[in-house]
Length: 380
Image 1 (cartoon, one colour):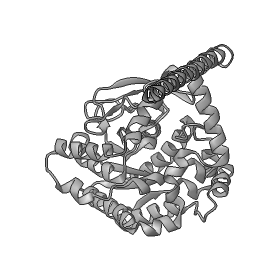
Image 2 (tube, rainbow, N blue to C red):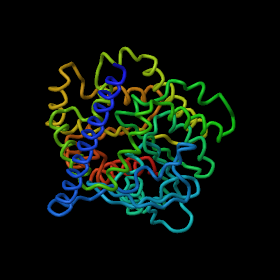
Image 3 (tube, one colour):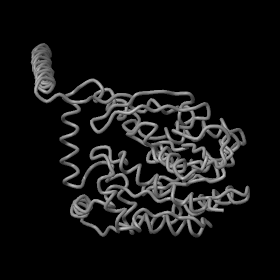
C-alpha cells in the first residue's frame, strides 16, 4: 500500500515538474518572440541610469557625479559638484553681486532635462539678461520632503552663502514631510550621523518597496518589450485614473485624509516656520514657490482621477494649504504659478506625458516667474 502511494506521488511529481517546465519554457519562448517583434517593428528607447545620481548611504546626490539618463520621455545628462549640488549654467563671470539657492525635490532637481534646462539654470539666464551678476545653485534632490530641504539648507549654507533662498514645494511634499521631526534634528549633531539616520528611515520599508525599483530598472533598461508594455499600460492607467503615482499621492487631494493627519499638517507648518527662521535670522531673503502637479492643470486627467476614485477630492487642497502655511511661516515673497490663467495654459504643455515632471517648457516658465520675482526683490 505504502509502495503504491509512493509510486503515485512520484508519478504526480514528475508530471507536475514536466508541465511546469513546459509552461515556463513556453513563457520564455513567447517573451523572446515578443522581444524580437518589438525590436524589429516597434523599437523602443530603453531606460538608462535609474537612480544612479543618489548616494543611498546618505540619501543625497552624489558629489562630483556625471551620468546619462534615458527614458521613453527624455534623455539627459546630470552632473553635480563637490557640495552635492546639481550643476547650474551660470553665465556671469567673476565676482557675483547676488547668490541664489534653490531648494526642492525632483521638480527643482530637473528630472528629465539637462543641467542647462533646469529652472535653476533658467533663473540664472534670465538674471544675466537683466544685467544682474548672479550665481544660482540647484539644491533640488528627487523625493525630498520639506524636512529634508531644511536639512540640506543647514548643511550647505556656508559653502553657498546665498542671499536669496528659493523654497519650492509640490503637492506631494505635503504628504511626504516626515513626522519624526524631533528625532531627525536632535538625535545627533554630526551631519553624517543625521544623513545615515535619514537614509535608514527612508529604507525602512517592506521587501516589495525595496525590490521593486531594482527589478523595474533591470527590466526597463534591458528589455524593449518591457518598455513597450510599460508605456501602453501606463497610458491605460492614466485614462482610467488609477496610475500608481496617483494612488500614492491621492490623499494630498482628499479632505478626509488630510483631516485625519493633523499631526502631519502641523508638521509641514512647523518645518516651513523653522526654515524661514533659519533664513530670516541670518538676514537672508526667502521666496516660496508652489509647483503644481500635472493633474492640477490637465482637466481631462483630473476628471479621470475623480471618476475612478468615486470620492470627494479637492483639486486645490495642497496648493491652498502650502501657500497658507508659507504665509503663516513668514514668507513675504510667495509665487503661485496657478494664480495666472496664462500660466495655467503654458503649464498644460509643460509636463512629460509618462514621467509627469516638468519638461523644458515647464522648467522655462517656472524659471522665468521666479527670476521676475528675484528681479523685483533686487531693485535698488
